[in-house]
Image (cartoon, rainbow, N blue to C red):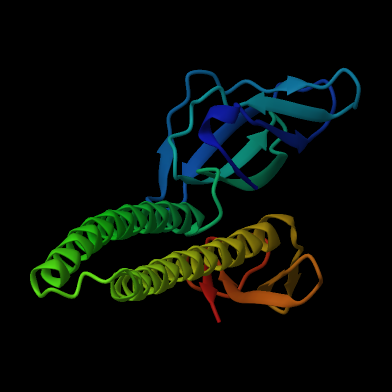
Length: 232
């Protein structure tokens, strides 16, 4: 199982009731034992023969751990957990999404600044055209109104084009965010199936999302003591 390092997850194993049960942990990436402050397991008062051990932040983050609970009769129960809290690459996807949003926001501000600058330039142009018309002796109200109408129409067209570009850009970003969110939900809420030495990850709708070969620490196909998975 996979869990966030700050959750203080409780591990469980079934052994003979009434015994003295302890736990030992192995870092599967380094093949080194993990030193513990307390390795004593507690038997459940509700389920006979079921023993628990609370991690209590004793396991470093981003660690693949093999755990074994054992008693004085040589019996044991084992399992695997991964500290980290996120599915592979999800944190990277979230970081890229945040970076993209920040970039888009910066582009929006830059475009809006250009719009303000353009409006200022157009206002200056209007004034200059009117002054030129007066100087040329064609200060007739109909000619001046025609010139003003043409300049205003051009300003509206430019403003509409910029606003349309901003809207299209925001739509593209939203679509990308939705796609990333759907992948994360499918990985988190979809099903996993072990078959023929492989782990098959499926979406919530039951469609295959990814397939991985499963091997032990020696590189042999294995579905019980899995050390490594590789995308097919």
